[in-house]
Image 1 (cartoon, each protein chain N blue to C red):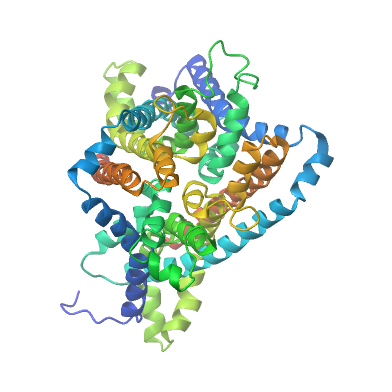
Image 2: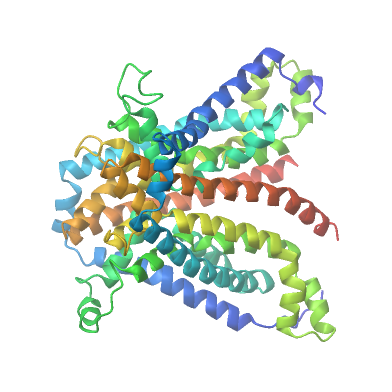
Length: 274
Length: 280
């Protein structure tokens, strides 16, 4: 290595300028508009909106429902990833490709399809003894749907990298298969699993399109926070909409930070393994 | 090959495979099947008739227009951003990458709201926009902006890791041999990342055509004018025109399946190319 490197590749200022300019115009300035608007509000305006019973109920459903959905996806996503990585069976590649469907299918389409399935006269709804569509449970079903790929896709590559020799060593030392899973495999995939669960949670908290069709949107019962933002906007209540949106944005940023830290931990773990 | 110590009993194996398939069938396959069944509930004639309606055709045209603007812009941005980030070292690079990913972690509704706050009648810009008869919110420009926002990271996040992996040697060699910057880009960089680029564009396009929440907030829902296909699905559904709603939805589902198919095919080729290029 020479001490001084000469830049041979051209276009640095042009491409970086374009990148920062376009990023500011499309993303940063509009987001700053929301933050500025929120910063200009009085404490009374904030508390007036955020302590309203209807708003609190919508937060409970958005955050609580997203937590349940993320946990369900954590369990089943780990199981699906395990099966796809460990057990070769016919049709595995097709199933693997299908995992990304919730990323590709527009949320409105997912919403009406899930509603048709879980409505009292639908294929699944008619088999169940309790109501799913038009209840908070319906919102959770939609949140599970849109979160399916996150856990599978973050756990899959890490599971592939888990060293078979570690498992063999555990077996040699007398560990049962279950012990090996809990004591050897689970700790090495824990950061990836937590990352996947956090991503699924973050996505479900903000989800709108697929939920509003199936949830029934009863104020205080099955109304999610993003829908309440839309409702406030339609009533020209910009202060209320901004208060809810800025709180959700703050949570998103906190999640983003947490996910970044999890991924750093994940890389350290992987580095330690190999 | 799996070895004895890492192999699970056959019974456990099949039990887990069955649970996994049942979960995926319940949450992924059945919704897709429901779209097709509901769309064809009243027969093929009713299906085609509802697709041929004026408002439906207008929504398809608008969706194509919006994706036709948003995708090329984000493609150009993705190329510029990945060139700057992968081919140069500068302070604040990690921050820049985080900012590019930002739209993924913002709720779609908030993605729409920010443009209403910026360009709506109540905003600081509002009176000026009204005076000069510039319509952004509740018109096509707002829909385009919201779509650009939500599809912003797709191409860039696909290209940045790919270009970083390719390194700078080939470009530097071409430049030292006398090729110009643009020629180097067309002859060296672009062929190296073309599949990754296509992959990013496919995902970007699927999201651009399918975005609902962000577009819903800025659209104003004017039939025939500011309704994209996903918004039209909602309107038809709320009017109890289920065949119509599911017919439009089936087009979007088809788009999703084509995207997934192309993505999977690309992943198979692309993986080989990446493996080959990684062996320098």
